Image: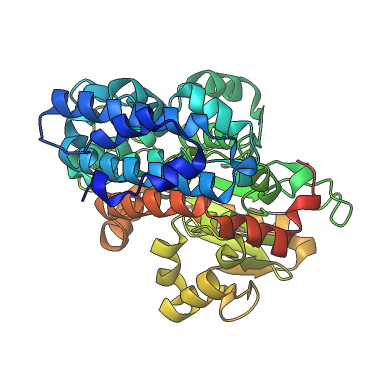
Length: 468
């Protein structure tokens, strides 16, 4: 329900030093939704504009007094309630406007920006995003939470949500040109990933050497393009995902699978909220489901995806997002000294789609222990082998990989796509994923801007002492 104007004591705004006439104009907007799109857009956009003006009167977040912080929180809370009501009434019409009645596919990173023009104030515009993105995470007001609420409502709508899932499974526009280069050279180097052929396999190596192959804003697009090109490469029948060598003094020259999300970048405000949604609806879901075609539904019944089996090679560790990636692959080869963790509790965020997938491998209790209590799973243990299919000595991992590739491809992989679809339809059909992402978009947005996130990063990561 909307918060009525009379539930606010104007004292909170007076103590914050806000102009009374502007406060009165904002309180006069009652947040009501009459289910007329034009009227509701005009009325609520006015409320959101005045609310933004009031917050702009206040000092930046680090400099606010307790009274000013309370006033900002009251404004944001009331306006956010109005956004929820507006989306509950009009999300389909908004999505239709943004996609030309479902005629065009728009990725999430563009959808959330375009929505700012269709319904001003519903989500942050470019100016607000630019201001927020220049700040450390602790100093942000959390405007991107409204992007999460918007995407949650879109994904909760069956038709709009499935259309958005389809958009995110299409190859990136850059894929075609990079695919030509790969066809000519058999190698490809991108920001965040490399790609090369190894016999009958296309091998993608995650590459962020300074940060132990962690994932961040600098790696995501390059890694997704590499996955697109590997999946579409006609010269290979299978694909491999592994980590490249790293620079860190402790591990220099060693291959490591992935340290998960770049916590240093997260602490310093360099991971935008939409990064999480891009990653799991694009990169990770493409590993799990293959690539969509624009003219066919990517759900399992239509059978229109282009896909290959994916092998994961875990060396050193698969932490956080690295462990999440393994849950989307078809076969995991791990070094005997490697381990996996999902340190969501110590970070304060939701570990991607691991909550949806991990329990299928380990059972519910181990999954809860890993996600909620930080349990480490060593690969060469009975629990680790629930995720890892094969264990090899670190020194012989490349020989073991060649054997796995040969085992998958020696008799051809003509039925691989069909078998993958048949497994998915029983475990996690696309509509189940859509529903999960509707919850994830909202909850991850709230976690991403929680004060507990900063406290956890300082307590468990010593983030304040690390340079981005």
